Amino acid sequence: MKTKFFYSMIFVLGLVFAGSTIANVNAQAAKKTVKTVQKVEYTCPEHPTVVSNKPGKCPKCGMALVEKKEVKKVVKKVTKMETKQVKK
Image 1 (cartoon, rainbow, N blue to C red):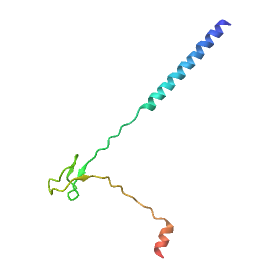
Image 2: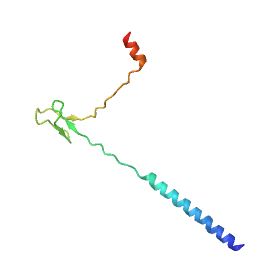
Image 3: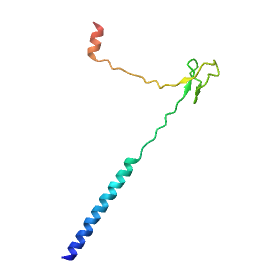
Image 4: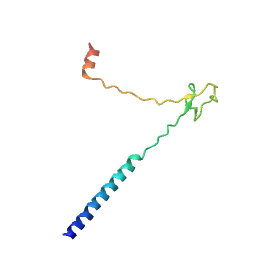
């Protein structure tokens, strides 16, 4: 009887230890964050080939360099209903 109790306690303690270890690993994984650094580039409005990593003046024309912004292309799908309205 004592041996069954002893083995049961060892089993339960093993489960508790395993559960706490898994919870600790999950907590550490959740703490990891990805740091993203946005690279800012400056360009001349008249000469888009002139690119710098800091603000200043364009060496070709002397204009102030402006922050370069990403251009996103938007594609709109035309539905059949819109096509019918255009034809009328």
